[in-house]
Length: 626
Ligand code: FHN
Image 1 (cartoon, helix red, strand yellow):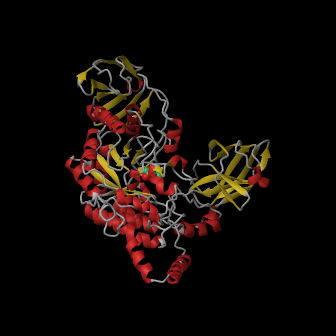
Image 2 (tube, helix red, strand yellow):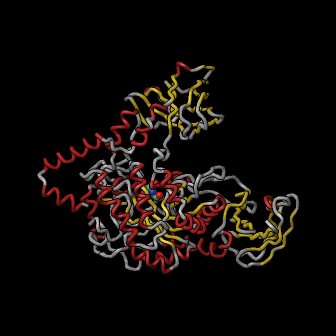
Image 3 (tube, helix red, strand yellow):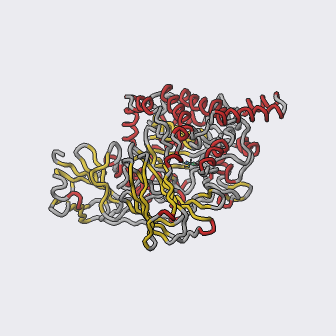
């Protein structure tokens, strides 16, 4: 791609180039090629509900309005206040469609130069159109309330849904999904030329980088707004050990992982595979001159592991211009909507259009990966950015057309994923219902890419807790490693993975191929993993007792998982008489039948023969004619 631009620019005098870009942008404007096209069709402002404070029925600090819902979709509630009157200490209690939630007044974005919009994260769903009521209790001085359609994944026109459904419901996809569901645990690998820097640029740690945005190591270029030319110099020194592929595949196997997903191209645009549509790749731009993705693919297949690739399709800081930010912002401004600049190269974007980036780099590279890796099982899209519904569908369809056995994750965009993810380092609560199978991706410290000074390694117990929590709720765990510039996995993280791998191997019957039981857990309350930043800030202080259990099931077995090594009598209330008719209780790993007794209050089991340093144990409870 870069060679095409260079070739053209050499050809075209500067002003010709400017003219060309202008022409392209005008044509954009003319057909409004922005990611909001589907929303344009469904003009969202037409469905905004704006309630002025002066129209409210006021009682003390409670304001109530009746209003009309024209479109039964998901909405968010916003409070608009004068910049000057905005005071973050205020709390707001909102009561709407039988739901009540209390939130602090957080600043979301500014509009009309002197007003602040505070958006409450809670999604409100109206199942039917017609009259509704909302009441707001607050001491905050506000001007009006806005209830506006919320586009998690912009609804889109739905015009592609039937065609998508046919592909998603195909035998190949459903068979692949069944295999994926049985796998439970995968290894995520964030690796690239940024790994050499380890989160440090010119002796400054990324946490002290001058620009706003995530401080995870793979965002080095964005955090320091490194010019494209300067950043690509990193490729000239990228020369990993040739043993990386074998070492990592072996580590994944030892850690109990069933699939591996490596970053074939992250937001920085560098391809870790031999790409014919870009010279900014490991074969053409580095002294390594070999295809790292292909090498890891072959090593994983030798270990019997399924293989997937991560691909940043919407955002590319090297060749993806501004990620279509300016085009989208023009339309958003006219709708009073804030356009998030995060993740966009606004400091020195490539001069091509976003559409050209997609046509000449992103779509071709996805096809290259599919043809390069015939046994590929998964494409993990990310950095959706401002791609349109049509573009997201084209990514999904191009994967299906070349290899229908390959699964596509949620972040392809617009609900075209074959399965969902709960968000980075997020585990859904047991009360959340997700409309598709899901996966949680998580870091092993607080960065995806190698961060030389981040030693906040999650302990084997913490990792196992997240895994067991996810298992009991019916999801997969995609646990990340960040190798350094030579491809070496930081030893502590490798040791911790091997330790959970020993436990997983011992208790594999309670893991692979299981589903959630009617009860996910018993004992203390949930401590949800709630995001990369949240975990980095809060750390992990949870302890477990012999009363805490998580459940999974398979055929006529219920598995009871404990994260303690306490021997002696344990009481499992969820398996009391009436809840299950028990035939046998065994301790996984030594297959020894244990002494047990069931009564109307609990299943009483005497645990013996536990190795001292064990992370926990699992019981296999065989049920009579389930
Ligand atoms: O921006 C990326 C980030 O670098 C990392 O790749 C994670 C992994 O899920 N995804 C994006 C942030 O959500």
